[in-house]
Image (cartoon, rainbow, N blue to C red; front, side, top):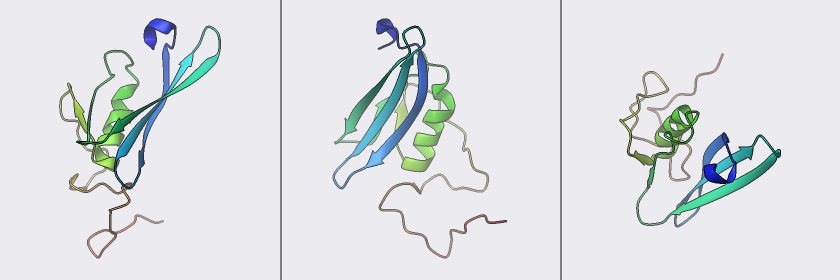
Length: 108
């Protein structure tokens, strides 16, 4: 997509379906002001290759995918956790995540 002029990564997120995860990339072409959405289904394993060599802004977004959805990002060093005092083993944005006594929401 970068060769097609999509030179800016606006965002990365994931969708948790019943039988698989889907990673969603939102790309933007700054020359012609067009946006493209690219999706990748993760059916067999919850891993995907990094795009950080193409889009430097992917660093933080991939860390979020890893921590919040439990997706392994291949081809990069293990990212440090975004949240302090988080075990990193659970994926709070997955539908299978269960809030329990050990998890407390930070509220003002």
